[in-house]
Length: 433
Image (cartoon, rainbow, N blue to C red; front, top):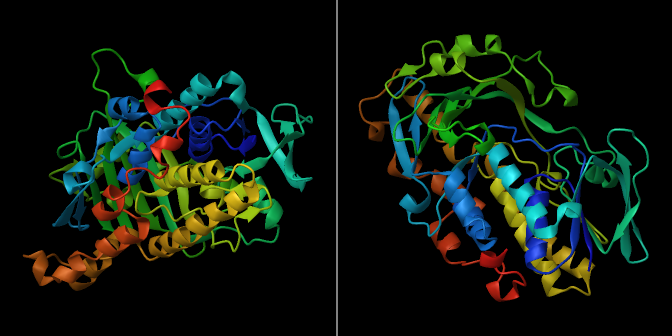
């Protein structure tokens, strides 16, 4: 069996490493002409870290990630609501890591090249069309620089991991409406020389109308200087957009300006963080609308399958996006290894497991994710409170537990599965990868 992967992001690269571990040849085609450690922070959840450890990446993750210990919720007035334990502190057998997205992305890319060879990751190749043909898949590619034909390539299976604006998805759903925007804008950045709380706690302050989220990450290895503190604060400011504002597709993930939001956070100076100071000293600002897409009725088309954001772009709430793409990759690999002579059957099994699960997560994220109790606090105690138990019942304070079940992030669910792929199926063992 041969597999072509369209997209060299987190989902596509994890798929490549998984297939290599299972002895299935594959090649990744990525449109970007160069991969750089760009982006801000991400969370890798315990169920994702479990799988990455099985891929032999434990050492790299421990060296470049920061183990998460807690998630603290505060009101817009700076009052503490509650703190949830995270990762190993919450009883998971694997940690949760706060990481620089670019560091993680480059780690995966370097491992693909090291393990599979430099020819396994082809940059500057844009997919412009796919088709099933005679029991195989043919992908048409163009050179990103010249626009000239660079294909076709043929394989037994094609995995489309080409993101929220997936070309492959658009081919099968040409009339799909634009991504759904909940009218919230996020401004993201990283600021050096700031340590918040114990350095291992994520903070969510405010609610959906106005919110500040922050946690520590490490600088990408290439940017570190000897003897220099390598910690940075990854942060997000969120506001509801004016009714007359609209976004075009080309506006997503664009450079932002503090002039558009900083004034709304001018009074957010708290004992554990000075938000105006964080914003004023940032290394850069990126602006994103909070978007997702409605669930699809089908992810697989003959020998072609969608994966990651190409299959289920989610509202960025709950810190699960990258982790869920890793799970997609592992389940897809497991099913292909179980039915190598029947790839269509394998892809259908992958879809049957992942698509219903992701529909539930999408619904949970649109409802506010794990933090949808915070608006209750603002509504009931707009001027603050003396005791949070006078504002929220015990049941309401545990309201995030239901979301954790939806995303599979409970100790019983995570610890009860030692690996999505039985280790005896590994052709390449983690310690020899």
